[in-house]
Length: 126
Image (cartoon, rainbow, N blue to C red; front, side, top):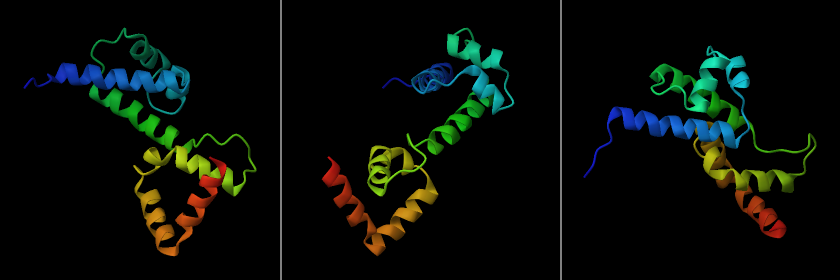
């Protein structure tokens, strides 16, 4: 059984971060505006020029990504219908279930039978 070295784990982690930044069209400037990092430092990581980014740097970018991506549910309009909301929740289920507050709210909705109603709406729109 092969065990990854700390450097290899860090490289894998860095690749995941860069992948998320690219997939979500997040610029180094945007990260810098919302963290204590400079755009230059973030861009070096995105470009692969920073071979061994600091743990604290990676953690700060990860925290930013988690916050940003958990707040974006891909809503396209300010005024959305309940069926559109149900579909967005369905599409983002795995990411939402990582949030404790969401899990707690879902547990309450299950107890109240509301989840069954949402599932009906989703099924109608599939």
